[in-house]
Image (cartoon, rainbow, N blue to C red; front, side, top):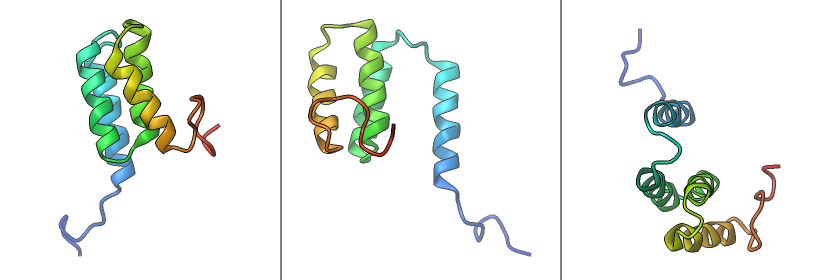
Length: 90
């Protein structure tokens, strides 16, 4: 019988659990936390998740320059320089 160290880790499932935990613990209007999450996702190359966080920030604070700049950047990285839904994720 394999031990826990030998079992493959489903990273996607772990990440989904993490996002559910964040949603349960952090209100949508917590600009600082959602901005920081967006940066973390962006640095990990999770551009769609980063965009979602920056969009959430901008729903609360329409003038958040950092979220605006980073949202533009992640959309460009996704090949979608005008914003909107990333290609293949509609």
